[in-house]
Length: 490
Image (cartoon, rainbow, N blue to C red; front, side, top):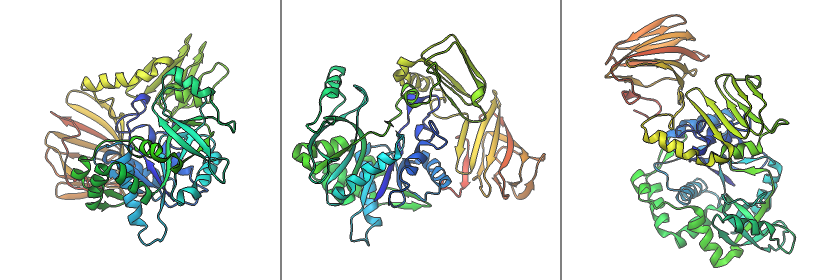
């Protein structure tokens, strides 16, 4: 069984913590692990191959680093553009079959989203194990969430008959779209003859053999199948990354697995799809109010989240109730408020009524339309070699705190519009400045003139911390001419 982890998406409803360049699946929201890491860790105890993670080009090093941190050697499949779940899973299925070419058993794909919370890991694993034999035999499996409320934000699965040989598996009558409130309330009341919920939330978690998926896709959406087959015919491997033919994939239609396969298959023969009800504290964490729902709360119903150097006692709540407060850079205090979401980051502050947080995406759209950058990235930006924090900036200067991982190296590059002054705070820097290469140690500095070819490397075993002062007429990140780069960005 190969876990296929879908790690795309921008998570705009969790702004300002989630941003395009660093969306929610890479954040630690309810644990010391990021949501991607939690998804992988949830599989510990199940016999699986190493995960296959699907993400876009921009997030590839985030995925690689977060999986490496937890000891997972994942294969990372890069989508040139987003085309929804059906094409992404088709790429994974082709990749899985190629990897298992020597095996006499077609691989089973366990398709998971990287941004779900599941509190009861044992219940999740039991559901997967319950489905596995039927899926290996050619059935399609899905995990249906036992609903806790008449939610209108999820699609639903109508449960059919009990499957032969298992009281925990049911056939699927149909997949339905997000209902209105009245319909959702009716769904909550209806039960099967066995006394279980007749309607389950569609979690988007599926199990299917790779060959079975491609057969179904070829039958119901031959256009998607053909485009993905062509895209995978032109793959190129780079470290742990697998790149597909960009032009072929761009021609692929945009479609979800629900529309492309699940709905037509359930209409043709619902007995081919089996669902097992999952009651495991599941949430897709689609909003700040959803995160408040699953968070630990004080006696006044307040939930707090801290990150960075901030500690729990850096959030002071007085005469406050029903609030969610997140802090990552400084003291946050509230007085005489209720039912608010307050999220403080170094470069943006959100204050919203808890019942309005579904509309945060409109704020993100306004920020983008105004030509600002706060929708796209944080002040602290991660790179394959480490990270940088934009500490200060003015009309003709910018100050960054740069951290370079041991053994890491920035690209050989030059700038047309800015000069740079580097001051080492801790560690040792190996600097190439024009024709010279030399070491710069703590409290030493070097100057890079405009147009000078230069490079920075950390030859040591501890992190290199340095301050970079940029000056010039243009300080944008696109004024980087990469001449050579070990991460394939040249």
